[in-house]
Image 1 (cartoon, rainbow, N blue to C red):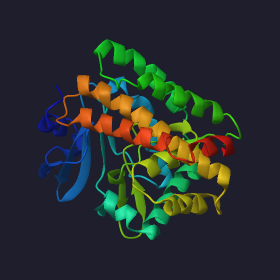
Image 2 (spheres, rainbow, N blue to C red; image 1 turned 45 degrees about the horizontal axis):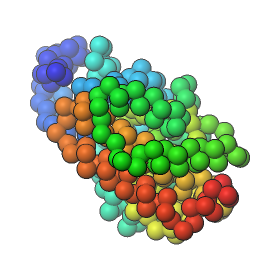
Image 3 (cartoon, rainbow, N blue to C red; image 1 turned 135 degrees about the horizontal axis):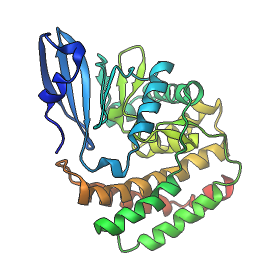
Amino acid sequence: MHPDIEEVINRIDDWKGRNISYEELGGGITNHNYTVFVDGEAFVLRIPGEGTDIFIDRENELDCSKAVGEAGVAPRVLYHLKPENITVVPFIRGKTLKTDDIVASNDLIQRIVRAIRSVHTEATFRKEFNPFETVRTYMNHVERSRAPLPPDFEWITGIVGTIEDAMQRDAPRPVACHNDYLSENFLDDGDKIWIIDWEYGGLGDPYFDLGDFAVEHPFTREQEELIIREYCGSVLRNRLCRMLLHRIVADYWWGVWAMIQLRVSKIDFDFLSYGNNRFDRMRRNIRDPDFEIWLEEV
């Protein structure tokens, strides 16, 4: 079981003897998050969920969180408690973005892409993240946990292998990537976009990072082109195709992830529907009339 929040608070020496209250902070499907008020000052305290170490290298996450905190893209890590790898960061007073907010505003899309580009250019990560290798590693957990996979999973995996081969052409330089751009991982304080939750951070393909952002939001093709224009300065066709293909790879990764979570997570969340929705969207994108063109032009 995850530790009791009051027990955790008592382990932070700087908070002893101070006026403290807390409330649960919703929205996550991996961890237990709380807003803690210390003499009126707000912090976010996160306790990792049970079973998450299957997926997350907590030492790497800490390294990434510190790097982006120093780069000014994310809140700085103030406390880190072992052995659970509990973290405390400042509470950012701003709006937690929703999918509808982002899809409805091209200006917001551009601001987010600029923030992502700041991560890519200003932060330095040490550990590599490769979505193809990650899923291959996950298959051991699928077998052990008897996680359910769709009946056409072999066909899906074959398509992903074709994409992986195509990605060897004109591959960009690896950069610091977040790889988990749910809308709720963006905070807007009115002036700046903050990016939180670096559990899957790593050195990787910047267009996978953008592809994950794109697949998490039902953008139009014009908005997907806007992402590439803002990131690259113009709509580079090969980079657009790379991002569009990586949308498929992201859904493949998260689909397998969800099916394992179904077996191991203690979080009250419908991982089965979440995973099946990922695989359904993946099939739709594979059947896009331009799919073969993306493979050729990447």
